[in-house]
Length: 268
Image (cartoon, rainbow, N blue to C red):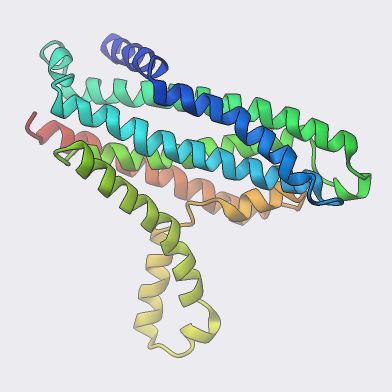
């Protein structure tokens, strides 16, 4: 366990010193300012527009961190021999778990800052919004969105770890990680159209069963419906929330477990 802490602390210091991470930290303020500016174009729905834009910012920051900083860090472990500094003194599982913990801590720090700025932005919006136009929205809305964005970004980070556990170079890692993430975002939308009652009625029973199986295996990663309910003060369906959380956690556990198995067997 001490080895995991050592690698996690090393990873966190490495990321905090990275110019790319500092740029993402600065981008949090930029997204908050842009949310205020864009919302002023909508006279009545300012708070809802702010939350929509802030969710976009959280999603982009989380995805950018996972795909670029996470991929670059793990890629350099292989191509520049960073991993060889630690592996003679610990097993590969401890090393990868330490890297994962460090990346997750840095991601949490980034989105926590974004959540704080988002809360301040929403507080300003609530102060100037008409009461009937901000029904169901509170300061907690931005914080809850930040937690969902963290879960969503952690899923992308798990995809990155899975890809880096077998890919051979930074470019290959980034290419496959981006492709897998894009598929995970787009496939549910395609499946939603395919599973509509009009389409299902036209296919054989075995095809319909296969389509529904694929639909359950690849849940919606974007969290768009969840964010929409939070941003617009709507009641969040319990069943939909449960499926979303189960899907995200299932992705993370499965991908991290696969990454540990593959990393243990790859050449370094």
